[in-house]
Image (tube, rainbow, N blue to C red; front, side, top):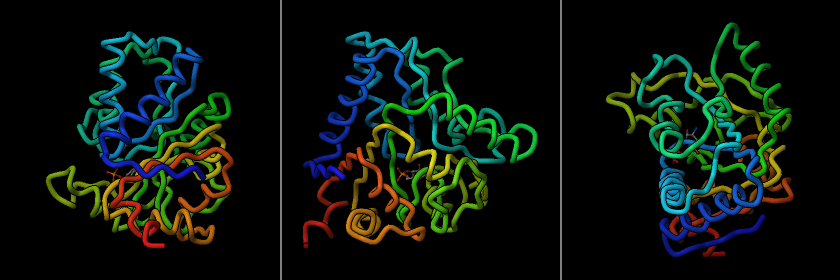
Length: 242
Ligand code: GLP
């Protein structure tokens, strides 16, 4: 794991956005693995700015997102589909036919299988990740197996509470989601994870220095050969103490 501890979230956003811009410029047919949550919003803002100013071309790029809530009505502003449109897709020249976010159509099994089939065709050149305070990546909650593929999940209470800030009330936060599994995430050629703020410090410390364990799904990243972790000082505080 390559650990980068930078001075501010702004510096992290710049560094990570530059990795994505370079990837797309070097390979216009890149597959980008994308994430949601508050963490990647700054990166997406810089990709949009770069597209407007320097015309980086996303026409042939394919995107695959990590996860999506189950049960929100079509067009709900907190669905990850709407989040991605609002923060990125509506502002770059991506071809919506090449944009992929998991969703339920038919049974859960059929929907998961369909996304796995898609992922076997479109392996991310670079996968962006945030991390949950309980060490989840995507919506792979504690207890998720290393060989897991796309699956539906009952969200941990901690995750629902953390995400309640985006909704009017905790009762509105969906109880279930569909997510790429750990093995899908590990297939990416390169992984870039961002964590900022003291609330992530414990998960970050365990991810990097703890044992590889299902109880902290992000720890599986220790087994990937090409991972960059971008941290601010708060998220890195338990590492800096050592
Ligand atoms: C959500 C997402 C994750 C994200 C995490 C952290 O539950 N499914 O992909 O990394 O929570 O969110 P935030 O970036 O808002 O801290």
